[in-house]
Length: 385
Ligand SMILES: [Zn+2]
Image (cartoon, rainbow, N blue to C red):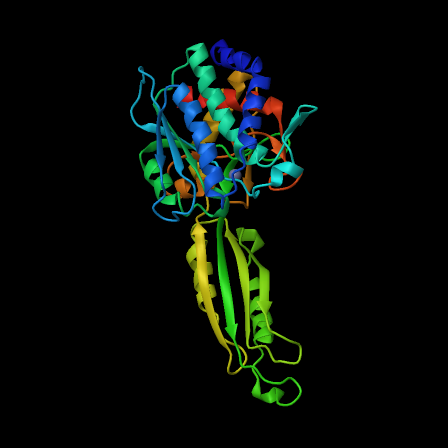
């Protein structure tokens, strides 16, 4: 029992060092669209992992080659008890473009650390390194080979990394995702909705709005009616949400609009609803005579259903009790790379990263104490899984 707590105690003495590491990572700006920035962060992380005896591999993505590299760090100390591997997922990219750091510098105050990407998720990357440090320093070996996979484009859909994530997941006994925990207590994430985007494009016919309006077919009117239709595809009780969040169309007020389109965010809680919702979008037909409607897109991140996380969550709770920490769970409408691994049926537990608030905003921060607690929890999982 006291065993795991030695790691927690060791980590407590390292809080400011881990916070310093987060600062170093935050200061290397790495927007998803900034290949050079992401690769500089990958360089720095590769150095850290080599120092810890990991086998480091950089993979240039085959798809979306304009993205940064995927970093795969395999840690397998001499005495590993069980076969197979545990996959730990994180991402090196952030939603902040280069230059953000100037107006949003990394700073530590009152137990919090602020800066672009602190919470989502430079802290998660530092927590992984700290967990390995604690295990090495206190003689807690992992039970299996551990693969840390850091991807370069999670914030924009993971096109570059998805195939690699799925390949690693298929040979893993469990997947641990270092996305931030939810809320002020940092609840783990045991369910995530599936996420997709549909585009509804309408083609009408232009005409002078005063001289010959009867000759026109108004694409904006048609689109408005189509939006009213797709809104009804939502079903709060089943966890389906449909939101047209971007629309464009028309040219001038005296010209009947020839074109209009809407981009629609769609989320589903159950995998079984993907086909149903997709079919409803595919079934959209024009309402105004002479209008044409074209639908594209789909749900590309399948939901992470709770049953896939259940067992791992129960283990995390037990380990939490040994560490003297209360571990809670939550579900979210947001997607992560954990959606892909859970959809393959591989046990996946998410939200193991830092605790804080304001992800993707100017006020983003982490609680520095959570770096210690989360590193201890991750180390405990890697030791026992
Ligand atoms: Zn993230």
